[in-house]
Length: 577
Ligand code: ADP
Image (cartoon, rainbow, N blue to C red; front, top):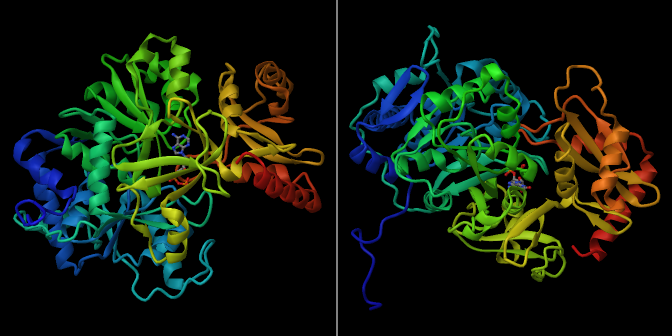
């Protein structure tokens, strides 16, 4: 049997590009993309991708060149997920919320040959290119050299109401000029790069995460299965495509012959309108988007006629929020992941017997991050110092580590960080978690966000989920505050519902502390609660705890801070972590 060998007929490189080719054949006349007044069929999408890939080659884009895109969820952004690799190049989607400095840093690091920019972001892109040319020092790169050939700028005009953009190279022009019969670049090696995604930099300077065709293909399949996404879904693009290539659903919707409903802005009115108009069946989003849906004004809402599947992740969804959003007719599946894992790595796989439980209990179980998606060979929670697996007791914290085919190839031009991330044969997530008796994982924190008070570990996530149960709390974030006696103590920041520019009526900081005293053990109760108007957020919409910590730390002397840091290092080494 071992004499049977691989040949072209039985062994082909795995690539998500085959999803489009297949879809263009069997769903040729079905709707592929909708964006306001614009609609395409899968046959048209395929041909538009061939045309663009052809034009990219005529612009001298060669194999493995980086093609960067700064755009919201518009048809061009979707098409480029196929067209760029069809030209043999690597797609680098850039977060539109980043500032010009960060964009310049990314362009410098990726050495992108082309930068496609949606018309709304032209000023920002031009500023980034100017910075790149000046070789100015940016926040993250102190050795920013003169960039010898900055990327070629190509504008993406508004497809629904184009404006004359003068001399600029424009996306639709490239599509028009391209050859619809272009034969896509053959992928000879499934390990070849398909995408480059920069981490959001909450924990360190952004790193360029490289995905292979194989990783992207397998991840897409396992996410479709993990979410039980059936044939021809109608998918609403509430998750930015620039975030891990839309958790692979850019490729995934083609794999299922579905319809992509593009959304430029994640606002309540636009979401409700598109959900209802196009009979949306699926959407992905961070839990923060639940608040936008729940807080919508009566005039913005539309009654949900059928169930919409939501895949949520990116931050822990508080159980109380799951209960509320499900009561509106959404059904939530919870996943956990990170850029390096090509999107979701764990999914809270539902067990039928849980259907008999009360709703609150169901939500509590669902708020756990769950078990590995099919592409992962293994996931574990390990003690950081010994790499020993923690017991399945739901209490002992360790670092979540992953291993499998959906993990990135590595960090671009950064062998040191790559080997550190992959040490001991595992990918180290930097997240602190526990394993429950039933084998389901629960993330308790990021390592640097764990609060150690008097040697006791306090999970900020647990504390936040209690705060979210308070009827007036819209958003909550808990950080460590230096404390002269305990080393650290929890400090909570909350945004109240219906804040209208003035201190909210009857709810005070003392009320929240009183509520905490009733609902959690005394050592967990925040010593300080701050009611704020708004939380600082990262470009991916996550609450920036480092900024909140900075705010708090200002109240303490440097020596007290140092003292607290030393306490933390000692406590981390000796504690259950
Ligand atoms: P960054 O690490 O720069 O924020 P990512 O966007 O890749 O970049 O974020 C991944 C991180 O988000 C994870 O390491 C984890 O801390 C957090 N995260 C993602 N999904 C979940 C989830 N379902 N529950 C809790 N935390 C999550």
